Image 1 (cartoon, rainbow, N blue to C red):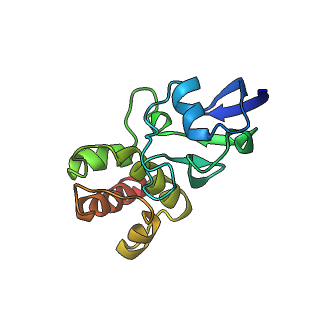
Image 2: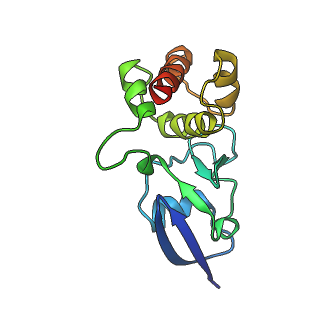
Length: 156
């Protein structure tokens, strides 16, 4: 049996019907076509599925879709505005913080949540804010540099 679900995703409202066992990641990807939210470990350990829900970064594989009913969700697709990249996206490109790119959406969303709460973080605070996001390619140095660079751009 399916249940009604109202999601507010990237400033759009969606009325859906979902099974109680469906997680938010699968609804975003399969029902809404927002494939930037990646499927990684499905256990909340890798961070590839990170989105922002009501201002907090969450692992969407661990959130039942029905738990997100009426909540504000931001995915990586919602970062850019009118075709203009978000400063975080620009910094990830400029600082070469993207290699294979699989972890990038989750990293961007965790970084966005961090900068929304702390617009001028230290390197240690950035590392702490990205905790729970695994990157197997970059070694994190360039990712941290990109987040710090974006903080400067946003603060100007």
